[in-house]
Each structure stands twice: as C-alpha cells, then as structure tokens.
Amino acid sequence: MNHKIKSFIFKTLDLLPSKLGFGIYHQLQKFLNRNSVHYKIKTNDRSFKEALQILAEADIELKDKTVLELGSGWAPIIPYFFLYFENAKNVVTYDINEHYDSKTIVKLNNYFKSTFNIEVATEKGNYPLPHPISYYPNKNLAISKTLSDEPVDLIFSRFVLEHIPPNDLEKIHQNFAQSLLKPFYILHMISPSDHRAYDDKTLSYYDFLKYSKEQWKQQHTKFDYHNRLRLPDYLQIFEKTGYEIVSLHYDTCDVNSEKYRKFKELTLHEDYTHYTEEELLAGSINVLLKFG
Ligand SMILES: C[S@@+](CC[C@H](N)C(=O)[O-])C[C@H]1O[C@@H](n2cnc3c(N)ncnc32)[C@H](O)[C@@H]1O
Image 1 (tube, protein in one colour):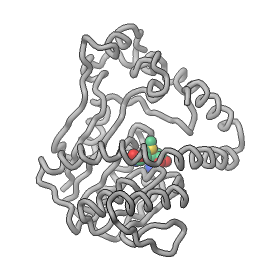
Image 2 (cartoon, helix red, strand yellow; image 1 turned 90 degrees about the vertical axis):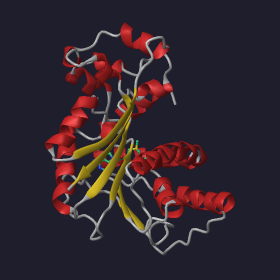
Image 3 (cartoon, protein in one colour; image 1 turned 60 degrees about the horizontal axis):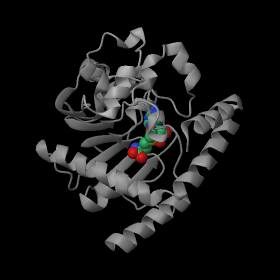
C-alpha cells in the first residue's frame, strides 16, 4: 500500500478514541496479513537463516533451549522455525499489542503440514498454537517485570527495536538483565531505515533524517512509530545496560548506488549531522549481545 494512503489511514485512526482506533487498526492488519502469510514465511525464512549463521559463528546451539521472542507480530513464524527446525524446547513470545489471528495461524499450520509434513499439534486456547509456544500479548516489558519462569537462553527480535522509544529500550534491557538467569544471549535484527521507502520508491531510505523531532512527530502515529535511532545510539544503549557485544553485522551503502544518490540529495536535520556517513547509512543491523 502506498505510504501516503497508509499514513492517511493511520492519522485518521489516531484521531479516534484509542480503543476504537486500535480496534479498526487490528481488523485491517488481520485482513492484510491473512492474505500475505506465504510471503511473510518466505521473508522470515531469509532472516532466520541469517540468524542461524550468526548463532553458529558464536557456537550457540538451541536444541532443548528456551527462546524468548520480543515482538511477536502477526503469526508465530519465527517461533515455529526455532521449535521445529532447531528443536528448541519452548518459545515464549511477547508483544505490546495483540496482533495474532487464529485464521492466519491456521494457514501457517496448514503450510507446515503441506510443505514440511509437520503436524502442528495445537492445544485448546485462544489461538491454535502448539504446547511449547506461549504467547504473551499486551505486555510492555519496559514496565512489566513478569517474565517467563523458565530460564531463557536466547532473546530474539526481528524488526522490533526500531519501533520502541529509546527510554523503553533501555528499560527493557535493564529488565532482562535483572530478571533472567545469567548468562543469556540476545540477537536483535533491526531495520533502521525509513519504512515509508519500502512502499514508495521515490523516497530515500533515509528520508526521515531530514526532519526535526517535532516535524517527525507530525509525520507518523502510534501505529507506525519509528524511533530513527542510528547504529551508535543502539550500541550505546546496549553498553550502558551492561551487555557485551559479541558480534555486529550491518549493511553499508554502495556509493555508486541509487540509494546513496538519494541519500546525498537530502539535507539532514542538524540532529543527524554529527554522525559519520557510515553510522547514518548502516542498515539491517544484526547484533548479538551477551549478559553475564
Ligand atoms: C514490524 S512488527 C515485527 C513483527 C515480527 N517480529 C516479524 O518479524 O514479523 C513489530 C512488532 O513489534 C511489536 N512491538 C512494538 N513495540 C513493542 C514493545 N515495546 N514490546 C514488545 N513488542 C513491541 C509490535 O506490536 C509488532 O508486533
């Protein structure tokens, strides 16, 4: 969907009382996601393979281990991958919203049966999930200290951190550090680029760096919040909260590319002029952290 239409819809929903706005937003998202579950499986699969490579480089094995996912999204695709392909013991998945949808999960279960011959043995509950997967929606881990009783071996997030305000990011990492048995690892996959550029090819992936904080607030809503943090900002949060950076990978931008040309056309807001070009352009950040 074109980002201008999307933005118009989000801004309209943002004017409604929160409960009503979120209600309509969820229905809309469910409808769109039910029809894109196969596409989502493919893109999650790409990320999962990248994640496995990073974990293998650090000699991290997940057989019989517990994974905590931050930011469950619309369907338990990554939890299924950990469970059925890496033989994790269980996966607990937390989200600040409740985006899961039974019809989408049934589609996912059918896909696992038809493609991998894996029968997802579902339990009775709100959603047709297998027993080793526990879904905790509507939980803000910046506030709630209640985490799973299980020792957690790996925390995983994909395309979530960029949607969390910086103060909450700090609190969430402090909460993990205080509540979980040590040592544990965290693998974050972060997309720091301007998400509007995915739908609008005329926009630079860095377009939002031209706005002041106030101007950016006018451009987006609680439904499409992006913190615009750059690579060093994330690293600073992880270091401040006591995490060791085990590995760090990110994309750079080829100076001969269209992407770079569009970046150079931008006039950066002064909030971003103190970063180096590499820090500003760093995309698809994959960072493996260790605590304890
Ligand atoms: C872009 S989606 C990514 C979902 C999924 N990880 C994926 O890769 O498809 C971002 C998700 O993060 C969730 N989220 C945003 N802020 C969060 C927070 N503070 N704690 C937990 N989840 C959060 C959103 O509700 C949403 O489900």
